[in-house]
Length: 473
Image 1 (tube, rainbow, N blue to C red):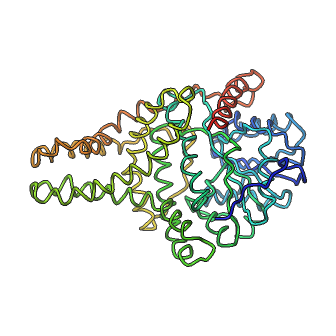
Image 2: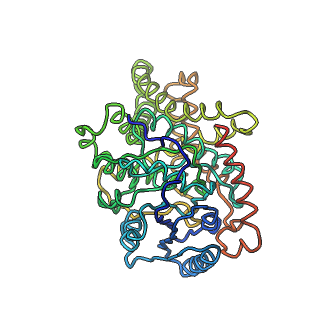
């Protein structure tokens, strides 16, 4: 794979092209994230485009107030866009923003509602990569930022954001490097050349990456450039995100499997990496179906029929767990002990929360295979925090996983994996109560919080900690 790292010299020293910042929100605008944009030290022309898809009238008024306040904090143009038709989800929103403003900048920084600038030189450092004409964008390293509303469980779960570096680093060096949808500086011309983002595509980032690759552009990974984000505010929101990702990955496989296989622009390692990345949720869905068969049907036929059926599930399950936990564990082992307090708690919570999304993933995969149309659902706002009643049905499934084998095949009591399989479903309702942020404590939505010093204190302390962690690893 071609090395896309900059050759040297001071980042961004040669030119200062106009740069746009596209900030996306939908009833979830976050003032602490917007205010963090003022940290950027870029000396060239900057233009902030806030694309607001909010349906709530109060939320739209809040965005107007935030934009007005933001325009007063430095010399730049701040513009609010609201498209006439809210269809096509996030991809269509980005396309609309580009249609209205792309002629004003050569590159654009794509931000979700919680994207938080930590490094003042973010743009200059990213532009040094984009001196290569074959690059369509630079993906930054995402790190967690604090939120006053975080519950204790989410304080630990948010650490998984930083650990995602353990997946992207080897992908960038040895395999297929994707754009992950936000916290990236993209080449405006390259994105327009491939037709923008695909409306109603839930994995618009993977889809855009493949189309850029097929057009001769690549995504570079810049782990030394940190940009913050927040973890979903509840277990329900997290499961909705898992559904979207599973649905989107099947869309990606359906649309691009054959073009990737036959394209000379993808090396063998990149092809394998692409299918490993996009096919992960399909593997998880297949494992759930096989689990139902092995633990709820096969035990009726006795031990002789059960053992041959169990072996493949153990192998596939071990591979799946390894794909998740090996990079996560290596990330924590590489981090100095003084900078990873509570990492065992984080691993345990990630196991329960990330491992308990099997049914959400299965529904996402099944709906995408059936081409069932789904509307785009933002998962970062407080509107996505309602309790998911399907958790109680999944808990019943966990009870069945306990009762059926105990009655018909008690030998299963000697298998630790059996307790793991049953337990992750039983814990669902409890997790929905433990993992649930307090929306009343979330003050960054208030544009006047800056004047009171609340967000500056919270964000400033967290930014320093995040950058220190990036430098250490």
